[in-house]
Image (tube, rainbow, N blue to C red; front, side, top):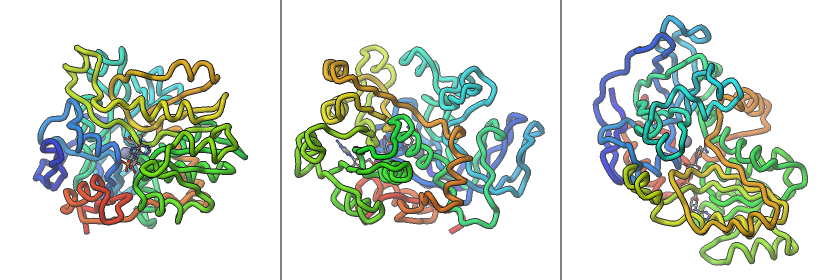
Length: 387
Ligand code: NAD
Ligand code: ZN
């Protein structure tokens, strides 16, 4: 089958790979009909995420038709149209039972992650040995473990685009607003006008936020977001100082909630990280501190941008003195996707608003390039094997 394989820094190829087989009774094999490229894939693409091996199949946002199920799968049968979630729960462990599927104790065997974090979080498709080395979904077929837990049934006659983003970015955007406890009347500032940030603005609006302010330096993305989210205000950090501007815009107080939808910039190898406790070449604390100093006293900071390692120069003083709350996490997709599907069906949410490019799977390398380089007005790319 055709699949998008990671071949090194800024290099992805369309490769010929074996069709995956059922290897556990709880598995399902999906014939992929649509799969998206995520900002999380760019962390691999640009940074050579530790634990990647040349030839690894990328992709964790995908959906398709169930081709085959193992004998223990009870909720799905061949022919069902399903969305797969990006992080993999077992459904039975201490964490899955508490709704923390993204912290599943069973699905990720990575010893390296345990050495770094003192614990392991859930396995992920297409995301290196760090999260279990499960093959990704940017392919013609994909294997999904614990299929009863990690698949969502959607109508067979619906357009793929309508539900595809339930695999990750819509639940992640919602998670960002949950962690930040976005409520009626809030002023919410969002760092990052990528697909996650724009959908976080969409979710914040649906939850009754009074003002939403988006921070980025990509003018085309700020303009795109403004065209999609009524009343959105923007700060271009290439032109203005973020902290001062946000204070000015909010009567000197700062926003009630700050959402981080950007992520880390550069990391080295696991060995280096574990040995030195120093991983990120660009210190992300600059942006985190911008959030800490900008948000109002008693405010909430929500981090869904992905980080893999340590940071330094974190403004713990301001964080403590200002009575702030800071929360973060990979999204427990399974916690939200049923309710979010209902909100899509009711027309309250429309995640397709971020989609700018639909390409054949064969053009995956081109998709990675425009999404990473931020050219051709690219905000979100979907790849289709059957195009
Ligand atoms: P993206 O790369 O398309 O968007 C990131 C945006 O941040 C870009 O528009 C970029 O210009 C902007 N940016 C860069 N530096 C900035 C700064 N200092 N201040 C403000 N904006 C800045 O990615 P995306 O697909 O929108 O994903 C965003 C993040 O969310 C990534 O880190 C991704 O890994 C993460 N993510 C997390 C989860 C989760 O479960 N927590 C799930 C999906 C994605
Ligand atoms: Zn993703």
